[in-house]
Image (cartoon, rainbow, N blue to C red; front, side, top):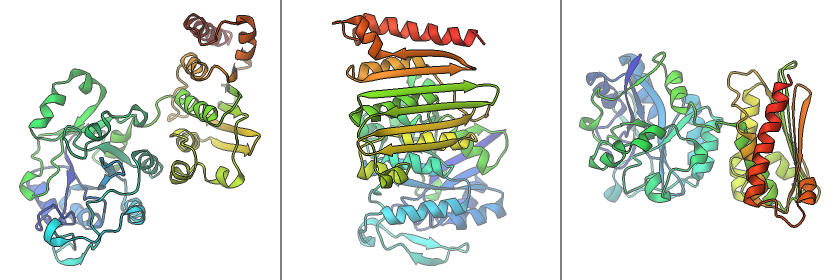
Length: 421
């Protein structure tokens, strides 16, 4: 079904928007313009969203709870949620992480919270135009845990754009959709075939006045016209696409933790419908407090070494596939991570290219010894880099010819145990 949308509209809560951008006016203008789905996405706050959703129900317009977050990198990201309760929870987090600066109405504009009849019921005192004390990485993990979706806003602009501020769109977030503005700056990206092949493009209005809200021009195909279906489409593919990427991320953490030995074990069993991934190292290890908190993105990225998206997202992926995730660690001993998945679960990501993953780990630090075992229905393949180094003598295991041979050896070994089934 074709659904006409505008997922980036500012209400009168945003100081840069017109005062007549009330939820009531926005929804009725969307109805006049024959849009199906809109999102109220004010700067760093969702305080006018619930009112808009209530009016939307009366007008048969789907209003998605949303917000335009300005991250600590000063990048604008649109975040969307499936229900108002989740949106309120997210808003509470934004309030906690907000830089407390009083709004100057004479300079920045009003920040109005209104009811269904356009009555001003409150004004937001703290300025909403400042960066939230949350990084893109933390935001990604947070929105993922809340079953929401996010995409970079106006990537073609020279202000608050992820491309302008970072120089590129990081692949680790696997954004499937990006927003390109309707202005003249969009031409460069709309004519870039490689860019269009990599991303689906959203054309939202970023409206700050009623006249700029989208006409029924831009649409998206959905199975059904619901908030849940729309968000699932936006976020589909916007997480780690292969489990091997998790393995690589965790192994890199082991290397950073000064591990000398890493053991990676994968067990695939069709009989009990299980996929088990274990990664064990003899690095610095973690104390009990850190183990209990390491899956919290705010804790991991602010008070410990950078663990990337590996641990929090790895855990979420396992648990979303009827599995479990366990971390055991001791200071001075090392860390063991076990992730279990229901092998046939519809949401389980494919394992990915393990030959490439293992070669990348070996090449990252030749001093680390790696044992990789892979079992498929009781057929086992094993690679031990310590034994290989003995046979190589003075030749480095990171020698290009050796790496090419190893990649082929791993790929052939895995194919062989698959064929034994």
